[in-house]
Amino acid sequence: MNADKLYDLSDITEFIEDDDEQIGYFVSIFIDDVPVMLSNINQAFKSSEYEQLKFHAHKLKSSIDLFKIKDLQTDIRTIENLVNEKSNPEKLPVLIDKLNSSLNLAIQQLKQDFNING
Image (cartoon, rainbow, N blue to C red; front, top):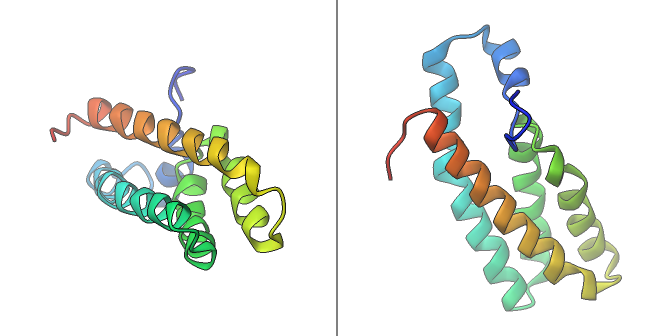
């Protein structure tokens, strides 16, 4: 992985044995699905629907882990735990802002690296 990349595809390439078509498929799913999940997280947070926030954070966690976005692996778990434990809600805005900015940057990097427009 390039040092300035937020993501690392090593787990995916190991799993599918460097099949470029399949790697592209996983990347496309990530690029399509993550913005929807982020939108759901943002909406749930803004409307204080914490069960929905926990649900979508849990769902997003697997994508973050699969793409090894180390910058967010702890943060997504912290969001999930804060909501689950109903503790320190004042920490959520900063964590959710970081989630948004880092995932949007990772998507931009993937689009550039895989020559995906849009």
